[in-house]
Image (cartoon, rainbow, N blue to C red; front, side, top):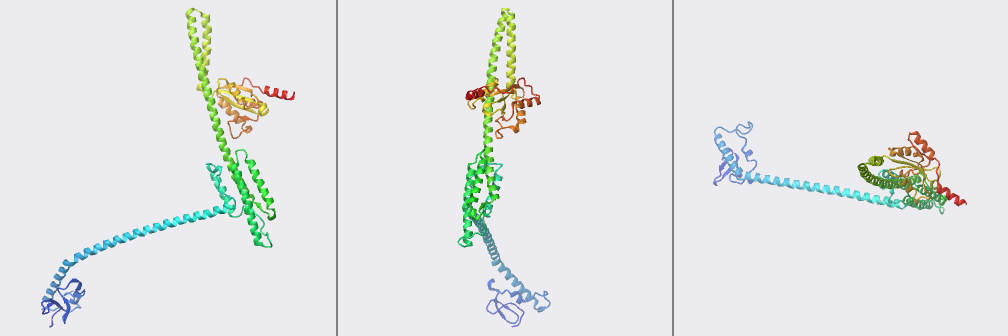
Length: 469
């Protein structure tokens, strides 16, 4: 049989492929899975597509066209029967694969986050372990993180933290003490070095314990005593370690003294604040007493005015002109007194300035300068000379002023360098003579009608006389 390549009945009733020289193993009714991928290639190029391929003669062209048409129909049928379902399955598989891929990426990111968190926790644990080791090392030298008074101070806390950091650094760097480096023990240099290290640690523990006790026990007024006590410990350690020239280094001692000073500064600030609050409460009580006195005085004067007014009306009704005139004068005095009380109540700067001394209690050159808004200013002076002092105060000056607050402030500022209590400014005692206060008043053009320079000090002088008799 000789014919062009194509599908022909091979005698069995089935269409079989003839490659031009022989039958192949391919049948037209076979499934797509068994179709040869090179079937179209075996057919050769279409007429006119490849000039180098085999030529199809004019007589065989119709058969070739029919063969190509038949193959095209067969392929379309196979695509219609199987192709779309296979494509949909392929898309589904691709979507499923993409979903699995996204899930795998998510799990990978979670795993990475867990690893990062675990590493961070490990770093914190390692840091805590390192910090614990450092703390144990410092504690072996007697250096503990005790509660320092200045920790709660807004102005001193930063300085305290810096000082403490330097103290710890010097202890870790073995710069807190100094000792000989060529000491031998039992003719052994290593044993000698160990002995020096042990003695240094032991005596440094003693010094640090004393420094901590000084800080915990310091008060507002005993910082000098505490510093002297710590300096004594330095001298004692130098004596105990004389054999190996062991000493506390001056720089380390200076840092511990600064730590002690910060504690004292905080305690002084706390005490000053308490004193100020106490003084402010006392000032408020004094002001309330003055206001109550003014209110009582005004009520009394109003009653007097009402009484004189009714008396005046009765005298005028009886025709007693002379008596009425006397009552009118009394009414005028009462009206002036009421006006004065109202002025005092309205003007909080008005009051009495006083300069007093107590020779028997404070010596001849100490005065107290203050002011009061009391109607009876001597009530305030007598209160100051109560049972809290052994003798009464002597008055050098006691005068009313529209700006008593300003005059008092001027005198305090003038003698600020002579103030006895520089912490609590409400303690208004100054180491000056009364004559100096009078001179300051004159320099500021303050009118004082009466000023006694020499104190009477009657009780004090009588006590001296009875003691020598």
